[in-house]
Amino acid sequence: MLKIKELHAGYGRLKILRGISLDVSQGTIVALLGGNGTGKSTLLKTISGLLPVMDGSIEFDEKDITNSKPHHIVRSGLVQVTQSKEAYPAMTVEENLMLGAFTRSDKAEIKYDLEGVYSFFPVLKDRRNMLSGTLSGGEVQMLVTGRGLMAKPKMLMLDEPSAALAPKVVLEIFANIYKISQTGVTILLVEQNVRMALLLAQYAYIIRDGHIMIEGKSEELINDPAIKEFFLGGTVTDTSKGLNA
Amino acid sequence: MDFDFNSLLAFIIFGVTIGVVYGIVALGISLIYSGLDIVHFAHGEIYMFGAFIGLFFSQVIGVPYPFAIIGAMIFAALLGMFIERVFYRRLTQAGGGYTVAGMGMIICGFGMSVALMNVAYLIWGAAAEPFPVDLGMPLQLGDISIPQSYVLTAVVSMLLMVVLNYFIRNTKLGLAVRAVAHNKDIAYLMGINVPLVISLIFGLGCALAAAAGVLIGPMQSVQVEMGYLMLMKAFAAAVVGGFGSLPGALIGGILVGIFENLGAAYISPSHKDIYAFLLLILVLIFRPSGLFGVIAKVKA
Ligand SMILES: Nc1ncnc2c1ncn2[C@@H]1O[C@H](COP(=O)(O)OP(=O)(O)OP(=O)(O)O)[C@@H](O)[C@H]1O
Ligand SMILES: [Mg+2]
Image (cartoon, rainbow over all chains, first blue to last red; front, side, top):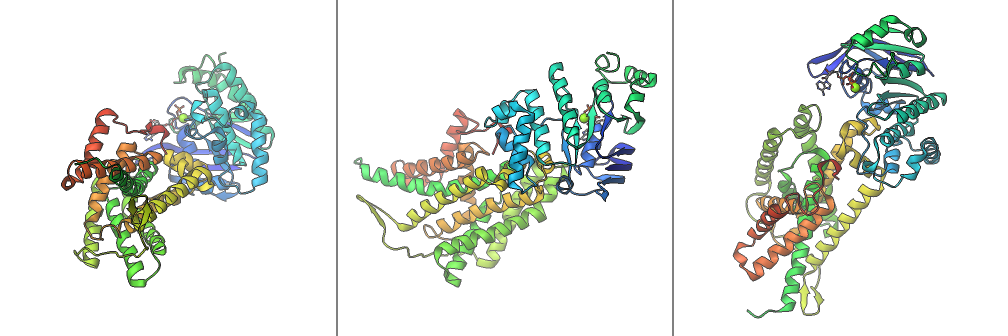
């Protein structure tokens, strides 16, 4: 569904990604793992069209989207939920969710999907008329995820959805990602919680210094001593929660 | 001087009327600021262009006055969008986004102000043009008689505010405007055509200034230099109300209008233009973020 070939990208003249190749097939969950500052968010920003492609190509749903405008990419069904957990604090929860459906005009279906998101995240329904600036961290993560779903994506890219959340909330978030995937949405999951991500995903890529170090099936990676070594020796701070746990 | 309640009331009414005009210019400046993070220093000249275009529509082509307002608004919106697209966008994008590009943007705004003024000199010359509009007999309110142009100004300004507020709060496009104002990248990821919305915001801000120009025209006269003072008053209004706050712009405008009319009436009429800045200084001393100051993150 998503095919990236030899991608080079970065900020201005500063190159961060040096030849990334990555494939996500339809209906799967693929994990993208790596330590701080290895280029995970940069990759997602480039895929979404927020950063220019310097070299290489991106193909989504059999169409070339290299250097397409971000709003066109969203319209083609590829939606990103950013790491910064940016909801619009001065808008209500419901306004935020409706913003997610900005590209759609099928009123009845939008309403149906809104109820769908509310049943997915009941706490959002209770808070529907509150300003999203008043939500807790976990609730904001649910809100931005729900907002992503409101776009009716074919594929969802989630950037560290479990970061900075309490362990109990983390479990809930991962359960939700599984449920979303069950509805047929393809998922690219960026995570630092290596163990959980590998349990959830079918396939995983490990990125370091802007290129893919290791890739493989999750069940193979999860028992691979090299991975254990990599994350213990690497810069990942949460190894205790990761493979070691 | 004997205290005369009627004349006090009259001064207040005139103050409010002129104040709502400051308000709609300030509203445009605030809208552009909250949407694009740029303080638009050439806004006074957009106001001046609006007045001349309105004059042209009304006196040369001969369309009814209300249509002259609409015509000037459309023209100014197009002019503003052109200026933003061709000149400002290069600067605002230089930093990798539409963030404040600092000094460059400010100088560019002043430069645009001078350039527009010179274009106006070239087209219309330096003389002040009268803008006669026959709106009928003044409105009689007890002992106070209010010229129709004042009534129309108040009504049109209020209408523009209500429409703008409805647009921003209750429509899908208005939601997009608020989204772009707060965070361009996230707005992009919602599938919003951000450059288009930015043009829209700029055009709206300029249309408001043009409406103000055509409304003020019949009360004063139309001349190339008129933009400067309006810009200053509108800035005062925007700052008094709290920069970036839309309701604040209106309230700030009305306060500036009342304050300067009362000052002119009871202190000294020859220093009329000082009072706006006196109020500005007072507000900055006692409430630096303005009366409706918004936290930067929760603007618009
Ligand atoms: N706006 C920017 N301008 C310049 N360099 C940037 C910018 N954003 C990130 N970088 C740099 O790009 C590199 C990769 O950053 P990126 O955000 O992609 O890392 P990441 O893998 O997502 O890390 P994390 O797990 O901490 O989110 C880092 O060295 C970072 O300093
Ligand atoms: Mg990141």
